[in-house]
Length: 188
Image: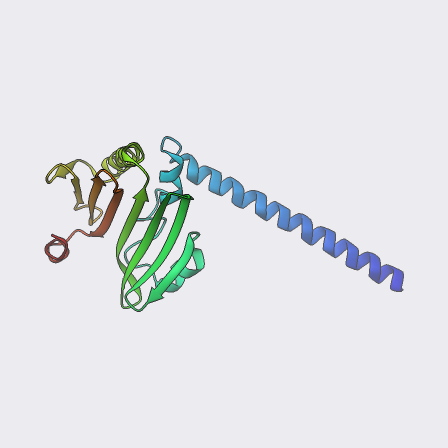
């Protein structure tokens, strides 16, 4: 009898292990399909965006903070009632902060702060952002020579991208907000 129980136990472990492997394989396929949408962009950009779904990284303006905590893959930095911050390190000289600004425990606005090592890295990522947001939200306008704006009334999304290319300071700030007049006034 003990021998049969032992065989039954081993069989259950083997079957369960096979099912887990199958699940892992399926999720890898799903991720591969999702990331293939972003294949034409740089590795840094793909790591920032993760997916074309949602407003940023698969999240929308009304995403609850608990869902972000569960699903955000970047490294957690800090949280308080008004924001949650995560980070991605690209290499020892480059990184990005992902900031979810919250209102009543839901995402109100998104912000990306990228710290880059040189003009070439900044220009390359600005080009990725231009292509991505133009494809997603249409034509952009400029203010000055370092500010790009997209406003999509159908998706109700506004994007403000500011980039810095000074001698020792290189980076990009992207701010995504609901495309309404009260948000625009706050951000200008």
